[in-house]
Image 1 (cartoon, helix red, strand yellow):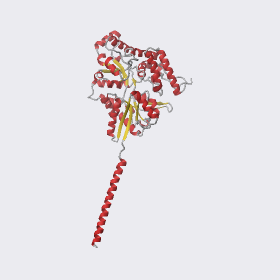
Image 2: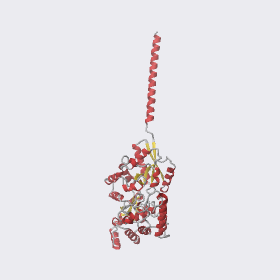
Image 3: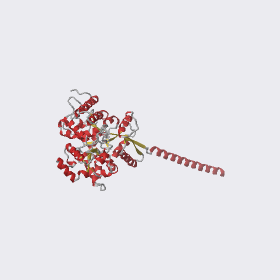
Image 4: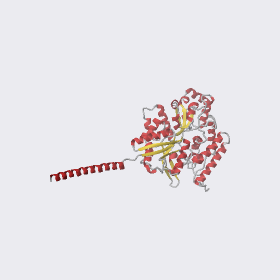
Amino acid sequence: MVNYYVRRGISRTIWAIIGIIVVVVIAIGAYYYVKTVTAPKTVTLVVVAYSGTTAQFIQFAGQLFHEEHPNVYVKVITYPFSQYVTNELTALEAHSTEYDIIEFTSTSALRFVPYVVPLNPYIGTLFNMSDLMAPQEAFGGEFYNTTTGQIEYIGIAYETVTYMLAYKCSLFNNQTLAQEFYNEYGVELNPLTWQNWTVVLDVDQFFVSHGITKYGVLVDDHVTHGIIDAYPAIFGWWYMRDPNLNDGRIGGLPNFNIMFYGAPAPGCKYPLPDFNTTDGIEALEVYKELVSYEPPPNITPITYDNLPELYAEYAPAAMLFVSQLSYLPPSVYNDTCLAPLPGGYAETGTNFLAVSKYSTHKQLALEFLAFLVSPKVQVYEYLYFHKFPISKEAFQMLLSNSTLSPHDKELLEAVYEAAQYAWANPPNIPPTYPELIPSFNQEVFSYLLGQISAQQAMNTAAASWINALVQTYGPCSG
């Protein structure tokens, strides 16, 4: 009997221990199951952009985003400027999920409309559009939907880029030079006072003929893309002064902008090109005179890439996008001042980021874009990369930053002011990138080389543009 009860007690004990072990194993298994199921999934957002400082800023912002979202990584893939748009469109046309966020230029923007996530539903929640520079966002970030009659946001500008006059402060603030120039031409040497392009040509002649600099005021004349940036910057002076051109719209119709009339032609859904008018021809002639004070465009074209170097070494001033200032040597950067284009206006030309409609991480991609243009991140864009922010609040934060030099603040103020009236833009309607730019640039380039007349160049380019309009929008009924 004793042995029986002893054995029975031992059996109960063993079974109790087994039961405890089973419970513990089940609990441990349940813990790891729950942990595995509920653990955040690691996500990599892939951004495709063009190589350069801006891509570095995007990657920098991606690291900051990762610190706030440990399960999210941002990877920036870059291509040369001349290739990245084509590479992106090839992937998007194939409905590839490779890229979550894509970059595009102002002039190529509307080619991306079918492939990106419309941002209108996220305005006011994720994106505070009132904090972003409106003219910057409008040229490329907005699409006028002719079907709905509404403006659709298709991308977000992540920096402020205005086409302005950069000049060497030490030369233009030199009182001896200023007096000599005034005695010779009867106008001030101060670029902030210039009211027309004649003064710029006088400045070119003064600096070159006196042997002060090798070249005059540099302007882009590159046939691949630069001409379509430089010409409207000059033509804007005539456009804003001629109501027959602008029809009361200072920057022209949305997406058509100033190289078209400010109203549709009779019987047309669209405006016609305006640059083959007397105004357009005069602007082209001024452009050629400006180019005559720099290297021949068929030998050493002035491009986005080499303009900062040539300005630093050989020129008193340059018409450039302020994004190019970051490529100047520190000594030249610190001796560079900014002014609006003669008559008080500017052109814009920033790039945009948009979420691919084929992304498998759309919400996170949208959140990263909102993070990228938030004031706290935009401040770093200037402090670390010398790119100007798109956020108005970031501008104010920088202007109140006691560690910035007075010169830095002068540049910030100049860009902030100019960005408010940067409207002298080329078109960005759908055929712009594949058709309008090449046909216009080639004709103007031929004129710059003296191969054809100004009127012939503009008439031929206008005819090509009208053909592209008909192919895109249909013929006029009138």
